[in-house]
Image (cartoon, rainbow, N blue to C red; front, side):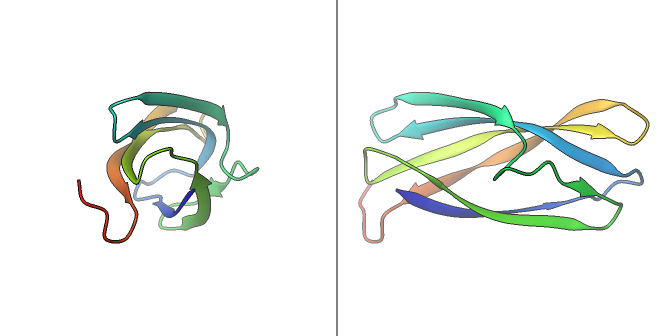
Length: 98
């Protein structure tokens, strides 16, 4: 099980809400799993301009390293929706060789 912490910052001019997530989790063998669901950690946070939301979650992985990437589905206070891309990041046990 890997723990990770994410900080989402609203760098735009409009208030936005995170309504759902889409993760692609890859293990060291190249196997990918997709995870979709509402919000994050049971919340659908609203972010005014310049504000942030931070959370910690976990990911089970059968190998000592892997990676995650994905998108958050967001909606503005005006009702416009867009995807916020989550850059890939590594999951690795300390001292794991890959």
